[in-house]
Amino acid sequence: MYKFVIVAPQAGQVSLVGDFNDWDVAKTTMIRSGKSGLWTVAVPLSVGRHLYAFVVDGTTWVQDPSAPIAPDDGFGHANSVKLVVRGSSS
Image (cartoon, rainbow, N blue to C red; front, side, top):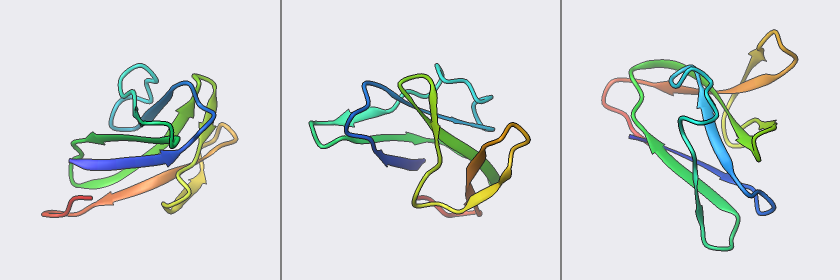
């Protein structure tokens, strides 16, 4: 399992989207930790390179500030990258 975290204190909802869930906002909803504004979710990922982003309140796409940024996706956005190697997790 790989843990994804974002700080979004003003958000009412945050989702994780990526090539591992067909960029579907409804598939991976994140959980808010108290009133801190910290949102988390853990998902299984296969070995390889995965592109992803966070979607805040269903409309605002946000890059992961703690991850490398991928080149422009062709739609005017840059996504974040998670590299998974055999035997690793985070």
